[in-house]
Length: 101
Image 1 (spheres, rainbow, N blue to C red):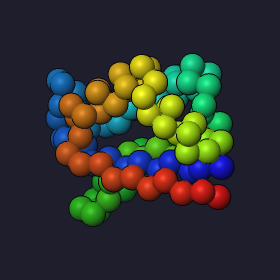
Image 2: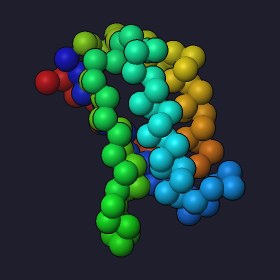
Image 3: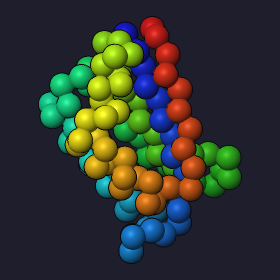
């Protein structure tokens, strides 16, 4: 199994919405992929509640896949690519870790 962990720092405002509004949209869009992208075995999206920490990221994705091939199919799935394009417009930075467990 492979765990795919992504964290994003979001712009204070982007696309006419606040950081929190955009974080909620990320959560909705990613959670909507479950059942659509069959490679997803588990998926959780968290929104940071401690906004006072300058080092903290705003939103995270923790997802699980059968193997790296399944993760790679997820990454190029058209529905995932739509979410990814949305996030690119509202983020400042992104970090990722993929590991076997």
